[in-house]
Length: 142
Image (cartoon, rainbow, N blue to C red; front, side):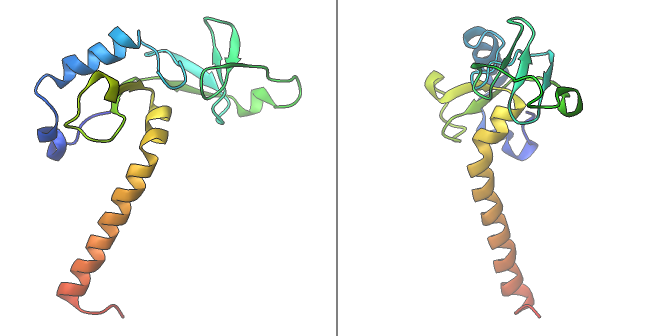
């Protein structure tokens, strides 16, 4: 994921190299959450299950092999395609903590799922701040 310009200051100067080491050195080009390969277009069902072409099997949202029962899911109707892009994520959401154990290589899906509680917290803070500024400068709401 691209880093916003206002947040660039919080990352180290060598972040691109550090991110590449985590994504392609340690994780070997696969998501550490679900195992999806970087740079490939994968076929998935939208609920976390995806087709692993290398192993010729379906995998669940954690990368474990699963069986899709014939007729249980209308695969041709629900199938989607997504290009996988790996990103380095901070497990504790602290951009100053760049220890190997704190960094993970996640695909878009796993990254957004991992960041969901943090995004909720930030959204609440932003809305609370806007309301407080509105109360301070514009008076009570009508």
